[in-house]
Length: 437
Image (cartoon, rainbow, N blue to C red; front, side, top):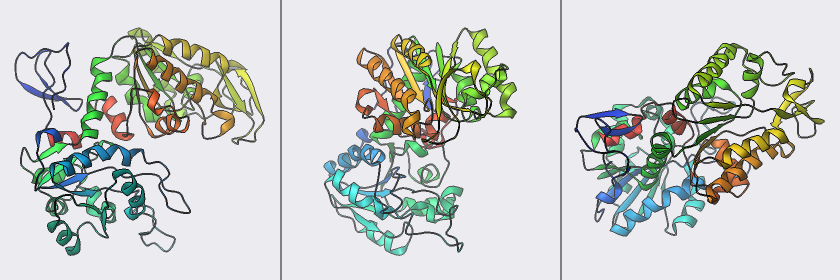
């Protein structure tokens, strides 16, 4: 599949790697990635790395958000339609880091068997489950696969070798398939065995992107490299430290950067404002000052809330007030943006041609403090309907558009949280590089 970007022209053909996209030198055309459409899978076993790290109900262990599973279905169906067989591998949580009270692994809580019901419903094809990913039984099962069959292997992270990127473990995993398909953008920033190292054991032409991975890369590149102006980045969440690298990189390409959530209070305190008991990273005040100075020097509009909803307690039952930011009471905390800020942000969003949204405007999990996030989401949806390109990424932002039934009203909803952030920070993603090499 070739990702065509009309304002880039092919000149010299010296290759270099930048922001997880291959370019030919000197205002070059983006080169083609190995794609699933390049292969006829008839008679072949496809080892597909998917991202089924989905939220489960704490009591029933049923899937509560099927976004990532749904996103993998087109790739699986393409392989089956060709007459191939599919071996799915994924992780679920961090079982070796979250042990039971007796110090043992909670295999039941972290088993991928819990996604089977949802996977079967979405795929419409029975999926066989293997209770291990590297046992003799697992390899015997995948070796005997017939065309049209689908197998899901047990959680990769039951093995410590997965996160360590162990070579021997990676080579072993490679025996499950004839072709390696990486369709797990959400893990592309990790050099784990199944996401990166395993690709070393498939020769060129036998390792490709799935449809989801290709779409993620294409849409992320469209924002970072091909943004129509004005380009507005909307960043929320709790901490400046989580977003400082992405802010720093976006200052080079964005026209407007809108800030919301707890991270805004570090910027306020850096300017000498009283923030009461609001969240603040005291050790990042100098960083916040530097960001504000850079934005001013580069001519980027850096928008912070002008009013907010404050509460006397971190609770949905708390007493609340709407105040100007400068009038925050000493014993209260800011938990959402206010009406004036919403109006200001909506005006900027409405004029934007490219929009990136990562992070909520307040504690949207509590109904009393979700108005700012809802209104920003609606504004993005409206701007999209008027011709803007919008990309929503990050767990909380994706949860918000899903919760408010706006996912189909934006241009693209990314399945990658950390991976998307690292892409926009300008980092090289090893999971992408492993396929493109």
